[in-house]
Image 1 (cartoon, helix red, strand yellow):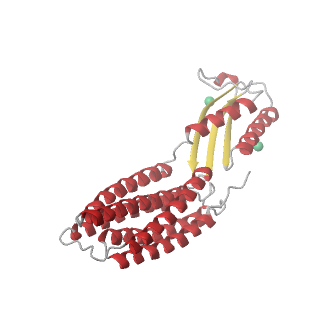
Image 2 (cartoon, rainbow, N blue to C red):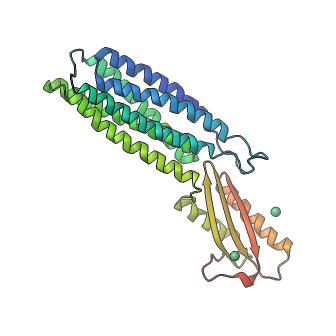
Image 3 (tube, helix red, strand yellow):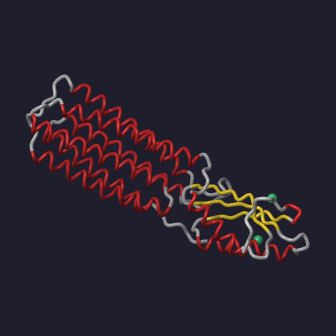
Length: 298
Ligand code: ZN
Ligand code: ZN
């Protein structure tokens, strides 16, 4: 089986990047005194925790299968992803809290271009790393890194909203725009957090492979199962980088065990060659078990 690529270096990189961004954001707040930038920095504090958690989860998930966990430890990543979603929601609530307090007396007297530029730099760093994480996570099926990437992206939108609000406040002199924008941004982050939780819980609930992968699996079986009469009841289950597939393989009742096993091995090897991390279980049946709706091998 092709060994899945490890997510660990990227997870560790996320810890380093989020510490850097945290430093930049507190600097921006210190330079400006803006409540919006303060809430932005608070959200980054949550990011550091999330990144550390994702790193631990990714390390645990890549441990090989053992007696206690014969199917592997891949699902550890979903726990980190759910926790990351909860952290995003908490960050959003913190921002709302800060913004509500700031409505009483926003003070933008210290606001200047340097603080805004520092905040802008933090945003660019986040945007770059979020793209790296999300691209990699999609390709290699890492729910923990996907959640980290979406977390950083929500951070980018926070910064965009905050910077826009501060610029408008500077131009118009309406300092109320600072906390107002912070609340709008918080609502967007809240929504993102709930979405991350929903997709991660889906993984814990044994979601099927995505439709593209399911189609790929059917194509491979169709091409490799010649000699068999039919394949039916294909079921798939995604667990992080691991993918499990099982199905019934109908052969002539008179076929020898050795011959039908040869077909099984051929199909298993074809699947493993084209889909990294897949584990296949095949149930062989005689022709009395043909079903009306099955997949006919080539
Ligand atoms: Zn069957
Ligand atoms: Zn075998």
